[in-house]
Structures are given as C-alpha cells and as structure tokens.
Image (cartoon, rainbow, N blue to C red; front, side, top):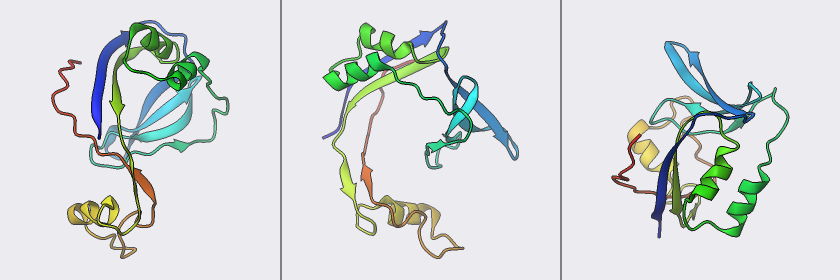
Length: 159
C-alpha cells in the first residue's frame, strides 16, 4: 500500500550551501535541461522541463567533490514519521535559496520484469508513444526496475 503521510512547504531565504540548481536552454527553449550543481559546477543532469519525458540522473564531468550531510543521513536512517521543524532545518542546511515542498510517502515498490503485463515500457509507453521506429522495439524494453505507483490528489499545499 502507498500512502501520503505528511507534506510541508518552506522557503530558504539565506544559504551557504555548495549545492544549487541551474537550467540551460536547448534548441528553441530558453530553459530546457535541469542541473544539480556543486560550487557552481554542473554535477548532475537531472532532467528537463518536459512533463511527459523521462526523469534521469546522470553524473557529469566537472564537479568532482561530494556532499555528505551527516545530520540528514542520521535522521533518515533512524526513521522519519513526520516532517518536523528539526528535520527540515537539517535538510535546509544543504539546500540553496528557494521555495521547497517536501512529501513523506510510504511506498511498497514492486519489482517489474521486462515484457510482463506490469511493464510500463512494453505496455503504456507503447500505447501512448508507439514502437521506436529506428530500433523496432519499445524504448528501454530490457530494464528490470522497481515500480512505485503514487496517486496523490489535492494535497492542499499552496506554492
């Protein structure tokens, strides 16, 4: 069973974090690609603004140092039952200036094997987008992955 446990919205007005977010244009779009940066260097390509495109998290050359937020890690490892001020304060210490929304969600992932009835890439994706004309097969047809289906309606959170 999957369920929404808690949501919180908050703003960070001042930050000394080395993490940041950046966008860059591509083709006809002034903003298309989204990046996670470390000390101003693009460290990860995290997707684009397309609402129907896949999400990806690709490590880039450049920013080679890591971020190890020990307090956040400890809090998450000990278990989180609500999004309280203490936890959000710890998370805020590693985030850049901006407006954020957090959701605490309990999920039960299901292992999906390629080609089965539950496989998004050989069912829903083919129904909506068709078969890749160049390859003659569905996109990403051979991936073993965990499927987490979340249906969250009307969170009541205002941005």
